[in-house]
Length: 507
Image (cartoon, rainbow, N blue to C red; front, side, top):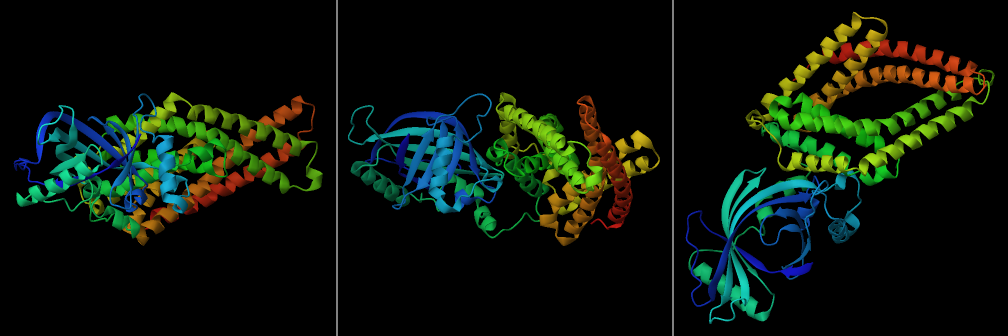
């Protein structure tokens, strides 16, 4: 449904009486509504900066999705879509998304940066009263509606009261009434609001700060730093869905990394969130990460093993090894990607995306999360460093398969440090960014070891298939030996990288 919205908002005190409309309109029936509206935007609030509003409202007489587009005369074109139930209910309807893309024209490029995520949540208690002709027309001859709204906004933690008069139909009679109401209210000390919308009031200067590229301050609450990081990861998951489905270059890998970063953040900073909410969510994100991991691992192994073959001399390439590697690993990748698409078509996946949206709309912060970011966040990264160091010490005193397992666990804990430091770096500056880079070296070196271990297993499977087909297996033995050497080098490099990371001062 499309309609032109013509309304005026007025400032009014929390306990002030509603101004008189005597002689202008007759008061009709009244209704009370309790509404919750989730406003969505890009992470840098491009819609708000273009005066575009997109919300999902529950409750009220016009419950549904509402898109408001600015018109030249100051009015707004309002496009409605109904709410849907069940998994996927938080997803922006495709027709409204298309309207947004069209309104932004050349600015819209798509991808993770343009993922539509919760930007603000407004809860409103509304007393809605019909305004009829003052001379008494038909009972249902409603010219406008007067709304007395008490509003609460998150994450700004604001509350206010405002009046809103909206025309039922944009005609000459309605325009005359609206102008008369504005004048009558002003005479009684109730003026038109300076804020063009509830959302604009809730966002404050956030759109301007986003346009300037400002990041949350370490002097502000930890919630702002963490919310920005969580939003980045959720955007990395939801914003790449189309690319993942068509297996666009690097899309699966980047989405998988976003799932890892999200899970890691909810673990590293778990003292600041309600774990009864976040722990089950982490498990669901883990489920998605596993589905993403299958095609990604096949892709990595294909490139790695083909690279090993490229480094061999012609004499070392015995039998149809290249054909088998390419055919077998392409098949594994294609089958794994097909399973991933099935996962993304499932109700479980749709339910997960709803929960990710709600994580941003209504974050389960504990009171400690509202403390100064510079005071609480660095200590939690320091705790993650201690966990990584302890795991490394355990690995050093073990051998064989146990050591490989503990080194893999060390890598996961080192990644937690790296991701946590990267979450803080935009607000905390160059020193933390450099610390994140030193821990990235640890994860990369230990990642080389893990790749060598996994590649050896994949090569063994390929060799078994070749042997069953009566093909020579000599070449497979050669590249397994190469990966064994690579693994040993990675252990040495990781030790040096970890010592350097532990020696790097942490704020």
